[in-house]
Image (cartoon, rainbow, N blue to C red; front, side, top):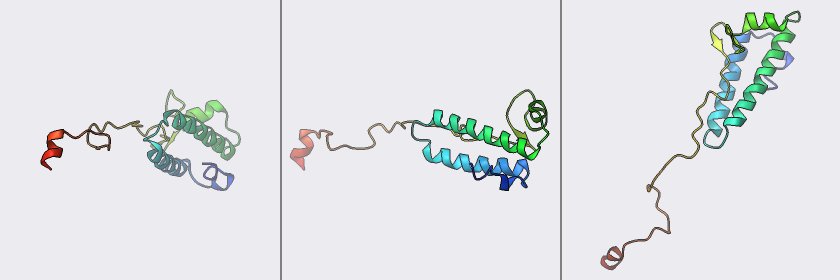
Length: 120
């Protein structure tokens, strides 16, 4: 994320940056979605939002916070969007903690009925 919002990427448009960051963060979140990672994804999104906001402020040096919100955020919110592309980040991926598998996986401790042992 740091390399994607570095000063060498300021020649990109904001829409290109958002597509690239959304793709990267979605891949990362899909890899970790089976663990306990919702709080981490939210924290990563918060850090990414700050990096994007700093990238915008450095690209448009005379921009105020109100002007940044008016030009680069969805109306009434602080969600960054540009040219129809919205920053979704890692928290948009659903986290499924422990999938229920029931009795599909046998264990060595599962007792076998005595009748099945005698006939076998």
